[in-house]
Picture 1 (cartoon, rainbow, N blue to C red):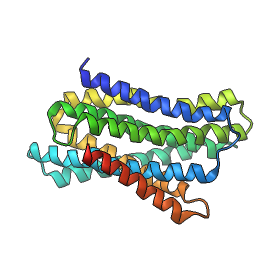
Picture 2: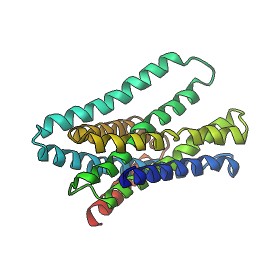
Picture 3: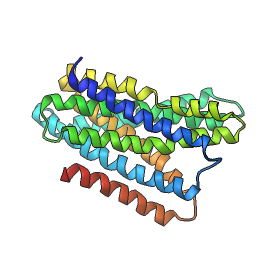
Picture 4: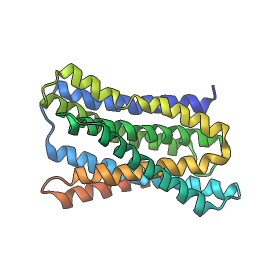
Length: 252
């Protein structure tokens, strides 16, 4: 197994652990302060948005040019396919679910499904280092994993706490919340292996992951962070998150 593949596995295990830690909040609190949750989601949205460009789209454009591809066409196609993939997935599962816990089921499925491209994103980021891209570095890849991990913490809580309110035991709520991100190590490995084996598809994989994450940010994270009376303040937290990731990516 290639070293970068192992690093991708370790990194996505880390992001999964952050989900587990978030889910564990069900043992300590009946609910988390809404302002704290919304601020956390706002910061996570900013971090993910920034990471989508600096760690995914930027190296996708660069590598596409190095491979003498039509960079704008390749990257735009991959980006749109990533967003469309999450859109279609959501629609399919919405039609199949019809029970009293439909809202919770959709939330769990949505978070689980978007953890797939997140795992791919980390795997692809580490796998792309093999090809010596200027923007593909250990630092960028680690920062992406950190960004996804930070976003996973409130997501773990966002699953386990509502389940607890619906009458599930703390243990079951914790388990369901934790399992929502188990797909990340699996697809992290897949992403690293695919990108190492199929170099010419790397720009598509990178931009696909970026498109999927941007769609999730727009559809879920930002709207959820704007569900209280402090919308302007939460928007500032999103800018703070973006700035943090941009500084880390460009300064380190």
